[in-house]
Image 1 (cartoon, one colour):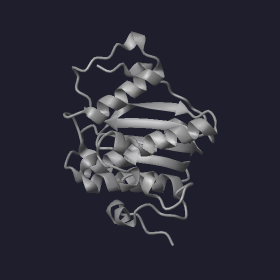
Image 2 (cartoon, rainbow, N blue to C red):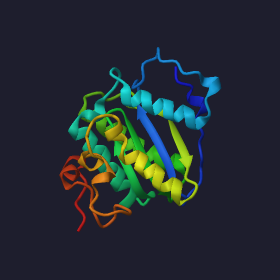
Image 3 (cartoon, rainbow, N blue to C red):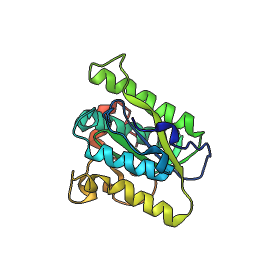
Image 4 (cartoon, rainbow, N blue to C red):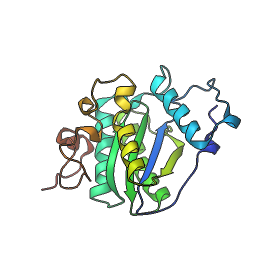
Length: 203
């Protein structure tokens, strides 16, 4: 099993943080990593590759309605709840990457976002009572502008690396398609998804 206890957890606010979480049962139990030889960063990259290459396990985020709901929740928690300034995101078939500057403690940020999306997804999929997200997450405090841009590119290019699209901006469930850079506020994220999340439209 993947050595999840090796993943670090940071509890800063205001500074940008890179956060990744995945669906429950998205990685097969028989996949073994040489945990003792990996740093936390290497462990993350190994996990991310496994998720991109996975052919079995949970892929609920492939469903348009579920992916749209998660996108809307990411934007809603940024612009309406004010939990973070949103810089980049991608909703992959079995995991989510988020680059944001938290305005609340990271555990509260992820608990709120994962909680509402799990509840709504399970209702949509008729899986109420089941685990939706893996409890564990990976988070990395961004150190400087160069790393910020590298991580933003890493997030938005994930669908290209995984072979889902040929250009990042073609992927519907990512910030790569935003018309301009910067936080999502005042810009909107794919209005076709707003209806699915059942959130009142903002002027």
